[in-house]
Image (cartoon, rainbow, N blue to C red; front, top):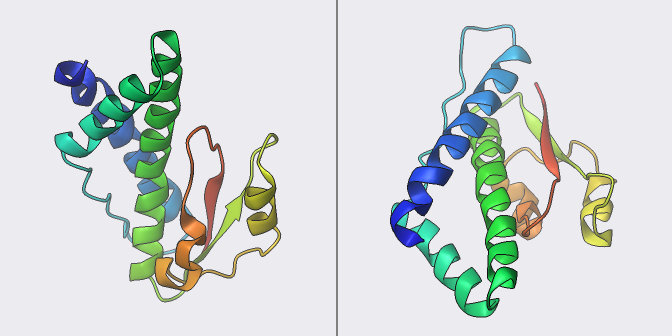
Length: 139
């Protein structure tokens, strides 16, 4: 599973980062500004494979891996947006929870576009497996 996991997941991560750049740039009046983040190394992805398949035996391991995969792909877009907010002094971001969000994610959504950088958001930018919450940028 580890031998092919990165090859299967990287295209989705790259696409999410590219779309995040397009979204960020569409919000501004200037030339293209956004840059995608560097994707994690293969070993970081393989840690998720080992964790999922050793924690959840049989089919449950694949369910766990599915959640971790979704998080990795979504995080490529989220991280790209946060990276570019850090680079643009006029930008800030908010968290938008999905319809089935947990209480913690719904609480973060109520704060609005108050984060000017990843550091100002502190630990509240962390996303968990099967979290469909997104980052919305204001420029």
